[in-house]
Length: 318
Ligand SMILES: NC(=O)c1ccc[n+]([C@@H]2O[C@H](COP(=O)([O-])OP(=O)(O)OC[C@H]3O[C@@H](n4cnc5c(N)ncnc54)[C@H](O)[C@@H]3O)[C@@H](O)[C@H]2O)c1
Image (tube, rainbow, N blue to C red):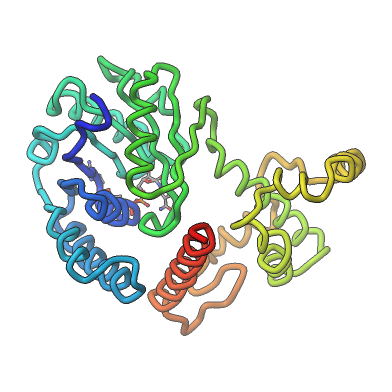
């Protein structure tokens, strides 16, 4: 399969990720069959698509007419075989269980043209393990998005041990066509790149809170107002280049050995989870969300992200 031959896409799973990813494909001109094992979930996905469309139009990311056309390119399908029929590209977004994904990949091979690209949005399972059940593992690759998929630009393109160069190339170029920011991950390692970076920061944040160095609020403030404030514009290596590598090298000598190297979660974090304090969905996490509407918080988050995205586009276009 060549990049230019991809026009029809099957999205398998219409949950948190599937709906937003479908929108991105449709917006870029692809026809999407959106399949889910649960018809109720497909209904919820349709409602979510309506609200994404509304937000994108309101925020001027797409015209009303183009928004309607994009939405029309997404067809919900309740039979797996039908969703896969004749498509050149499959993106799987079902729950993170290896056996479930493997079962589906066997079906993908059975029901799609021989050279279709088979991609998975797995967060952490090995692409190589998912592809192990396939007759043609060379056409299986990772396409790892970030939530909310319709807004966050990053997509990691992951090469499994048997993924072909062509598969990596097609996933990469499709990602570019979607207006996203692809990054090739050359080895099928746990956490790929983005979660390794995210969890390195998360581990240190937990360690600092556990040892009483700083409150949860202030660890978040430190990131948002300091280190993280720079990140949309300068990555950690660009920051080091601007600061001077001699300076960063010198600090690394005494600081690396002080950083958390814990290999399991800290006890206080285990306890919080055991007590059912799971964050906004249970009303309590590191913060108190009693009486706070989850939908409102997520809407506000999406608005911030969209405005940041617009600002980045605007400044880059200058
Ligand atoms: N949520 C995130 O932040 C995020 C980010 C990046 C990657 N991912 C990955 O994306 C994948 C999907 O995550 P999600 O958060 O969208 O999950 P989700 O639970 O919101 O959605 C999964 C959907 O798959 C459907 N499903 C279950 N079994 C199915 C089957 N046999 N066939 C078709 N559909 C089936 C469910 O009905 C559900 O609608 C996972 O692998 C996850 O690790 C999630």
